[in-house]
Length: 614
Image (spheres, rainbow, N blue to C red):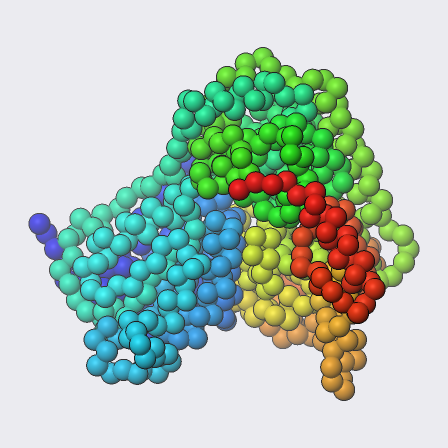
């Protein structure tokens, strides 16, 4: 057997370079790049190896480890889980800064590879700089904090371990059922140690994402349930995107006359003018889509985790409704006594349609879906229209952006009030052109995620909306985008605080406290951030828009810029596109405030309507 003597770090990089995949018929790197901040623990060995292969696996410099990790997550979603970015940090705080990003990837089932330096395996120089010692367990380091938020975790304590670990890393990242983030810890001495690796380990491999087929009996059972349905509804989740099943979903819904509602992760599975599209589901969804789901006797849930925002904390579907869970993950397919179909979404929809044959839902029910979609369109037109008042509402900002958007543009947001506004008011013009991080609801994802998505998108603009709170939490990857030449357009909506949480606070009977700047303790709560000046200081084009006309003009101008553009818009503090579905949050059982006691009574009424399941 032919071998080559190289360091552990060099072997890791060579292996990553050798992994290939196919995207749209083209062979491309599975690991196309690395987001890196170097420090002791990863600069002298891993950094050296990456520099030696700089043209094969480029390194992109970030400003924060969390931002780099979030960029990697957004890249994985934008590629529909077909490519994987790597994020690497030093030991200590560099590593723990990435834990939040790993949580985002884990909750959203997105592939990302996190590699951090670690303390010395020999322990001879312990304690080293940035090492946190555990007196009762010297094997523990801060890298163990990744264990709850990754699918696969390993610490490489001997060079030979890469031979067993790295194939598991790659298969985990590509597995449609277990897909999620992976963590590797590299102790400093091990990363620098040489070993005789088999040369065959570094031969190029072209991977394909598996498409597991559902059991014949499961498909048959689901077909029987659907064929007996009078009011079926399809829920399109993120798994439709990751299976590349959008066309098959559209064909299935059209052929069988079934209305389709979408989750946040599944948004843009259908374009908004598709005849079967009925609207966005859930707490941040539209009344029309929720009405369809509430009236359904059979719900075909395709590629969705069915989280509380989609199900109204399980108050949306009546107990009498039968759920069919079509998912590659058995864990999701069997939720709430669902009839499980454990398999790939694209292939399962084709096979299920074949079993249904010429069966079509009752025409009266199909037409209900059409009516609901038309009603939704009328509602959105009203919400996004110019009412002549300033500042603008979130909905009006969304409307202006939508009118300026092309089918190739990619729109993004994350935490705060914008997910609800976009989920309802954004009508998708193109397939797989929407990313709202609402699995972990991570403030700060927006700016870093837009940078990551810009690496993946080859057409159109990346259009990202962020609130002032999330902008202040993580904005430095604007500078990363300027350095790297990966452009996006960022709309900063400033309503002077954490306004959506203040809404929740007040809606549950509480007083406004510690959310809006006007409520902040201290003598200078009237001081406001100059977001235009701040963004410009990071190298972006920056401007302010006040009216709808100014905003639309600024977006058009930004399209012609050579680098990231930031448009700042003052927005109304409390003008929301309300979702009317119950969402269970903890409301105090006793309180001196009558408003809280009233909110508790409404909470108890909502809980009483929950569908019971396991």
